[in-house]
Image (cartoon, rainbow, N blue to C red; front, top):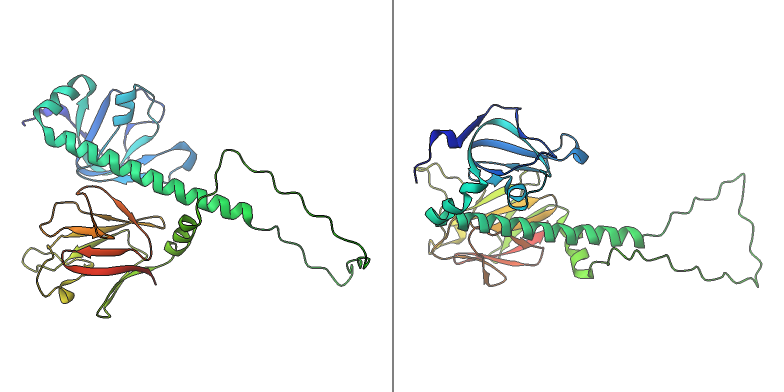
Length: 285
């Protein structure tokens, strides 16, 4: 579909597309460049960084509410503007945009749920941790308790009605995933995940196309079941996800369940991943 030139917005680096609290009836698709979404509570630390092919501003447009974030160009960006009045027509003319929107909204919702589970686990652990008792000093030794005296049981700490403790498996998974992780193949091959990176391409190299995946599984893939850009492992803080950006012939699986293209699937140590015919264990290092 051809788009008129006035549908595009060129934003120089450092300039705001919109600011938090503004009313908005326009969403934007990033044709090129990068956009940071910032919230006043976090200062200049971006809530999320977006790149080409991603979009933002849709919630304010759908709900007719103030913008919850400010959008700042991290580098020069070219944006496609989509007005609310033209959105329905755009979806009718281009079904791919509707599918992309559904995938991204689903992915964001899934990430929010997984982050909430992690936050609840941290909160529950913090409330269970006993208060530290200062060690007695030589100048003020603690008074001896009478032998017959019995210490009264301490009353239970008041329960916060707004927070339910996370299940034990979620707490354990969050604690294990906090460190470095690896992929472990049955033949003994180990593929470490660099904790300094946030994305790892899984596939096989192609020098002609310039493809050199961070996780090269071609050595354990004698049947060549892998695609060059088969899938990605994505790290968000201490959480990991598997994502297929494009559909593959032989598929990507988490615990024998095929991953839906475009949807981030959360993983934890102990999960079994399969890329084509190559099966590996996701484990803490």
